[in-house]
Image (tube, rainbow, N blue to C red; front, side, top):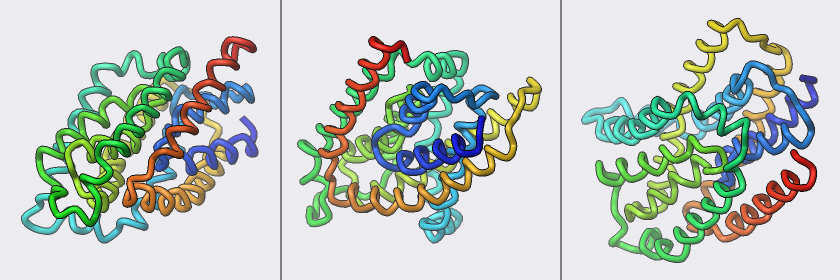
Length: 263
């Protein structure tokens, strides 16, 4: 893999990780279309996800510190919300890489995500608005619901941020809390995936392109910082329609290129 390819993939990862359009799906498409061999299984892609954690930690530094302040309620909710993703990862660990690299479900997943986001805006936008006094605070119930939705995101094409914010909307969580908690939920999942992938890669002796990986991670961090701001505004206003339309277009394009050109 060349450095310019790593930078391109890093930019794609950063710009799409926090937008509800599926970063894994976009990486898969770009790798297919440009015939980029990242090597090492999913290691490179997961390292790019790790790069996008840098802006999250910077923007939500106060929120992260708050996790470790008594009575540790938010930390408990974060643990609860992470468990379904851990369970999904363990149950499907042998199939995740096949689903990711095989890509047979990508278009269907992108269309499903479009439906979820449309439903979130049409049926829950007013319920969760900042002006609605009946919007609910973060709770164990909302954490479980968001966690279950996040568990589905192991399937490429089902955006983690998209499924999580939909779960938050379904649970009636106020938009600002939905946005903040959705970002916090990305931290343990990405760190866990990076650790597991790193151990697996080292144990299998897989080749790692160190320099391209470094460039990819840096470009993912920079572009991810921009995407965080865009996503915060979108979630607080519950405006997901533009993303839904885009997802339909990219799903159709994915399907057509697969049928016509085999990529």
